[in-house]
Length: 234
Image 1 (cartoon, rainbow, N blue to C red):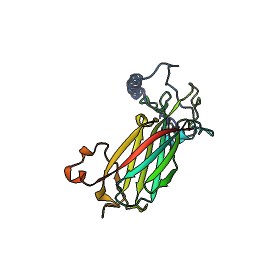
Image 2: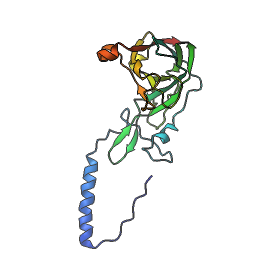
Image 3: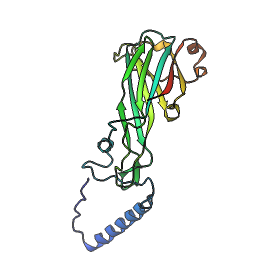
Image 4: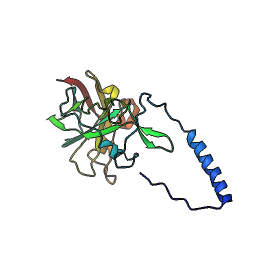
């Protein structure tokens, strides 16, 4: 936390001026939006020995569930691949929407707890790979002394590339909350022209399109796709 500065001694006239300034600042701060004490979702972070607006410091508070049970499996299949893919990587994102912590006391700004973690991607065939995730991977606990924080799995993101070289194009499939439910099938389309990489560009990312009609006519004739199928896992 920042220490308050020590103010020098001022003559009476300057003290009067300073009082006016302080009064104006205090009035401004009083106008900042605040929530009533004890209202749902108004948790305030306790001291963690690090600045409150340091997201990484907040992440150290959150506990991973050692025995998650609510598993889901996502199978990805590449259709009409432009060539072989050797590297598969992914990450998961979790967020607690009913809790928040202070990021700026002066501005009254808050943020919801969030946590990202890597996920193992296993190859299941020449053009198939599988991701297993758990909705309850984070422990629902009272992290801020204001009630239990409930976590949601909000994102599954995977990227594939030809060789893993820095210059390779990474083809990304990004599933959000509405996609992550058993029975969902999502298909993403990509232009083949930047496989395995675009010369002179380096480290490119291709997030594709759900609707192939969003590509221009020239690109539309040269596409491949990745299908993500979601199912429950016991």
